[in-house]
Length: 112
Image 1: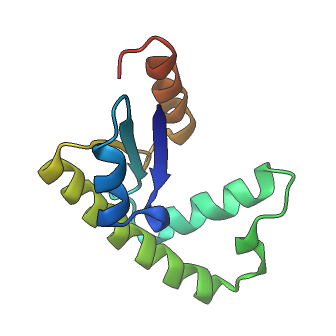
Image 2: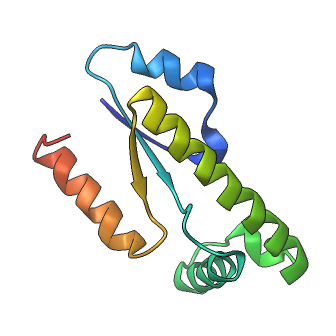
């Protein structure tokens, strides 16, 4: 089984639980390399791209910038934790769709 977790869903206890399950692979995603402006631009881009209502559309620019700062910091911490504990971390800072498609291809081909 594969679990792909994004930053806000992760706790040490949750990761340890899944890590200790047989036939389970933990894959973490994050955008640790982005500046707050780059992250902001990406969020606003994806808000327009997807047809369903993104909750971030309701945020002012100032509110969204605060979230971007939080998400970048969270991604850096998750990346560090993954390196320390041996979990898989994929950086989606750039070429997000390509990275995610690559992950699914590796899962399909059982290369992860």
